[in-house]
Image 1 (cartoon, helix red, strand yellow):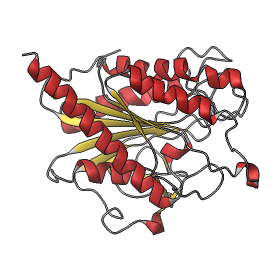
Image 2 (cartoon, rainbow, N blue to C red; image 1 turned 45 degrees about the vertical axis):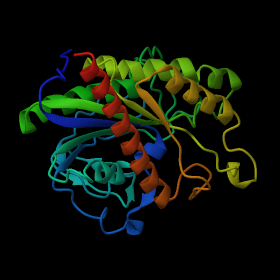
Image 3 (cartoon, rainbow, N blue to C red; image 1 turned 90 degrees about the vertical axis):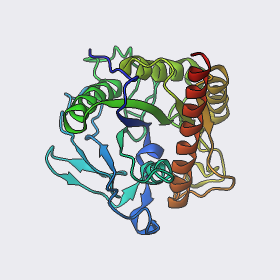
Image 4 (spheres, rainbow, N blue to C red; image 1 turned 135 degrees about the vertical axis):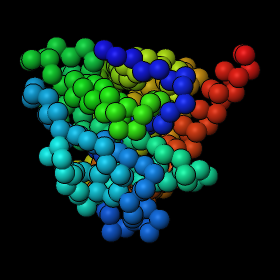
Length: 295
């Protein structure tokens, strides 16, 4: 597969990926005016989601970012059908453009609700394992990988050269919900997925912001942990960023809200988007300073 050079001036492309809290359950009607708009200098490529084992759906195209790219969004390949939901993408983009509103940026988003990394999770929502061998071998990694390359290739045709600039990843709830064995494998599995993304774009030090999962303590409507092995997964997420100097941990604000046992409220998605953007900006700044000091 084609590898993408990142050393020449070009548009920055950010990858947003994971499961439902990256897809987003925020209500569009809750958005403040500065986010409830069409972003003239930001474009998003957001393809349809597929369950594992299904053929790749090749529909997806670049369009200016606007609300409605959360849960329930779909596309027919030439027209997008927006939902009433949003994820971190709006405040993420707004924060990135805060000091450079004239800058143009690109967002590639693929997040599948309920998806795990471990292939033995039994929910049936999908698996991100790059070495997946179940059934016909087609899974969430297959779809993500296909559309990542399609997004990059079509971006170059539409906008000119693009530079992968960072990954925002929010996932792990499903891996924390099953068994201790699955949760204890999360650290290795997380590293495999995120470093596989870096490999796909040919950029081994691509900055990564990892969203730490949090528990509503409302599992199935009762006052108990939603994710029985959440602490195991959170520990693995912390260890990943501690061992990778080009990664950072992003936490939701203290006492943030939920709309149900699993999904954040609207304000939390806004806060997370800002924190993802700040983390990636800091990582990029440190990387550039390091590169500059070595020349």
